[in-house]
Image (cartoon, rainbow, N blue to C red; front, side, top):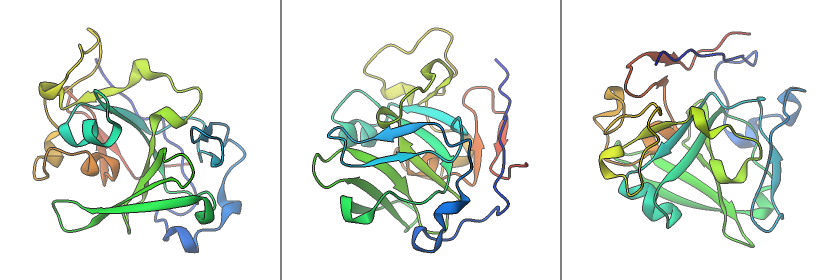
Length: 193
């Protein structure tokens, strides 16, 4: 299976921290709606489709979701919904940075993962309407608790670029280069208009 990237750009390749990012940067193509379980937090994604989708079967994602796997949609950094509606759990990752995990203050739904200085965010897949999960890349399948679809792109662990990290998804939540699963083909985080 050969994967291709169809990624568009915002004029700035580097994204400032959320507090410095201006909402008017969002393009008209922001059509994917996302929300928490109770509906208090709603937002739109910056692109019509995520740059890529991951279904992660690692132990960290299973703990995070209290289920058999975690689902992440990777997008260029975009403004957070109102911080008055969000809480943030910061946890260290293996390279000494902190993964910021934002969730709704009312219902506790985890919504977005971010790392300071990174150009990408991970939107938790269950909060976005209209994703095509058939194209998701399954990672850490050696830890899978459920069968992996027969024709799915998958890898037993993380992609080789992320082998230096532990068996958690923060490397894929914040990739410098997005890479595919079993084919090894690279997706670049530098995207063109």
